[in-house]
Image 1 (cartoon, chains in turn cyan, purple, orange, brown):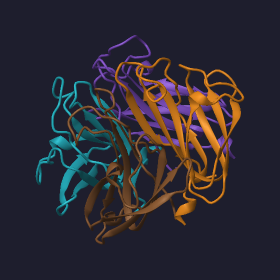
Image 2 (cartoon, chains in turn cyan, blue, orange, brown):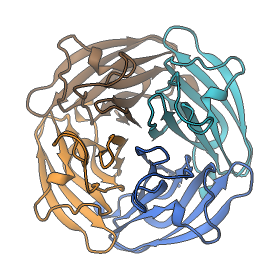
Image 3 (spheres, chains in turn purple, orange, brown, red):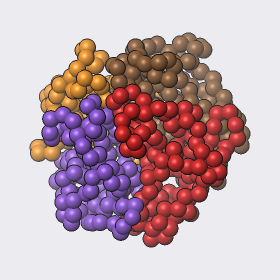
Image 4 (cartoon, chains in turn yellow, red, green, blue):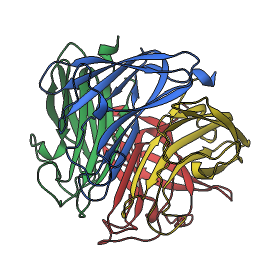
Length: 126
Length: 126
Length: 126
Length: 126
């Protein structure tokens, strides 16, 4: 059924919150987003783990996406167990208890005109 | 056979129509597009459901893509059952009666130079 | 074996060659590219079919990618059986006799600063 | 388990390091990146082979991504067995001894404002 579309495990290998922005906040602030769609009829409890180049992983960050809802998570806004450092390379892994769909985007407004990028995340088969 | 390439269920987790544009309309108007390829020999009847962060899903929006045709749907242009709100986060799920291929793009021209992004949508296995 | 990575059928749903450019030609000319990797030890003979919104498909365009080579095909440069129209929506389907990997990119330089987008194409299981 | 998410074989068909940059180095230097996530508990030994349009493949370039770490590899920085030529089309294939997730990005700052693009790489089933 289309209302359970998705997978339970996802990864975004590219992660980097640019340090600096141009334009009105918050919509033109440089940010990284994980857009999570939960098209199922059950709330999704999602654990996010962040991986770095030079230290052990941090997490889990706990996020709930209610049934039949979408949530656009800005990595900029994650604070528990700790904020996501700026200008630092990281990756993220998502583990959900119900199937979801995750897409990654970045708005980079360090220079005066903004740049955008997006990709569907990688879904594991586990 | 290559002329039936695709899947019947697709999702785009990232959705957001920027509010504001620079440059000549309609080609430089900020917009979100779902490009749908129906390479089969049968017309595709497609139902689109939109998911939001704070209310129940809206839809279905009904779209037909004729046999051996492509259709680039601007979410900006969807009006029935209701227009897609601007500057609002949403996700979309597509259910087709024949296999299709769907790709997501955004042109953001809020600042004076445009930004682009694209990704193949997520295809369910259902 | 890694040297046969890929699939034989691919589709790019989003296609549009912007009409107009800024910056030095040819590297900053607005263009659409299909990057084809043939990591196998056999030449790849590839047929490309273009799909439009309002007329029958056009093709096949014939392309050869030699063994252990990559080819970045600009849709702008396809001429046989006919050139690809500018400022026109299209989709493309690729059929190869050996496994290849295909990625889609666009450089849009209609405004003074360029915009980029890319995605891995959709690979069918046929 | 989510900590072994990924595949062992990956390909990026689109490769091109722009020749020229605007803005402060190194963060605004035009570059191509392969972001590699190794979420497993074992170090990943990865061989990268580069494919060109007019000559035999070059490699392997050897990279290690430690257990539970991410590494953002700039193709600009690869030097052994030889540097990656600028303004030249190439593709890349990755072979790892443990599952990893790979995402491709480019920052193009040839013009005064930067442009970004990204996509999940293609993962083979081998």
